[in-house]
Image 1 (cartoon, rainbow, N blue to C red):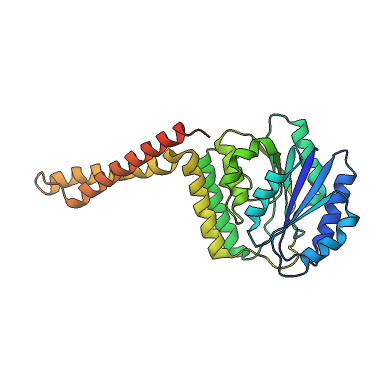
Image 2: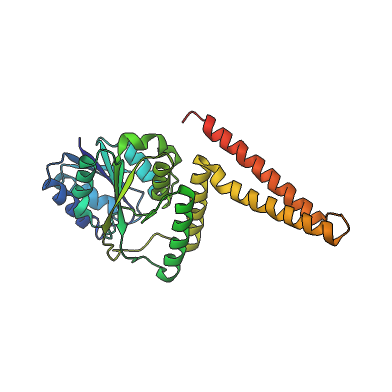
Length: 293
């Protein structure tokens, strides 16, 4: 099979069929063989009933209901593992992404065999808490770009297509929440799997957002640091160690002149802390490079 579209759903009863129709219409009009894997993440409304009733209308749709809520990351991880398509597409069911362009993303991978993932880079921000989200996401994205060593136009876009075989070793790293898309991006980049970006419009959300700014932003930041630490810990730890070592040397040199060849406790602590962090960084790097995966 050419492609599997993984569509997690949680309390989307009012618009989920509109999204299913949009996706199936686009793929039916293409040359691609496909399946639409719809995962109901234990919705508390009538989403599952709506999908079950619609199954006969959509022969390419496969419904996977969860027995408990696992989060969008869990849904995408399990959906990717269960996918029959050589290419997997992730998207959302809230009408925000231009899912009619899914065939374009798949065809891009067919035409560019050197690319392992193509991501929809949003040109606008339409989410909730926009005043807080825009600067926060910009800062996190710039941090991720520095740590990954490459430009990332959109770090956490929910619309992407990638080669399933390439993604399999990284599925176990996916967290259960929203930051799973960030994790997949950084996993590919950290292992030199090429990613290209296509600009997309980002529409107004249908239904209620499941994003909680403080909780999910905190997890988002931690996941960026965790992923870079997992693949390249020197990038995170060594700059801090060198700053502390330099500060300790400067402070110690100043103390020699100010206190008659005596070095203060502060200077000693700065230098020793820098040494400890540098040792941890080298040990972490050794572990990463000796790891089997």
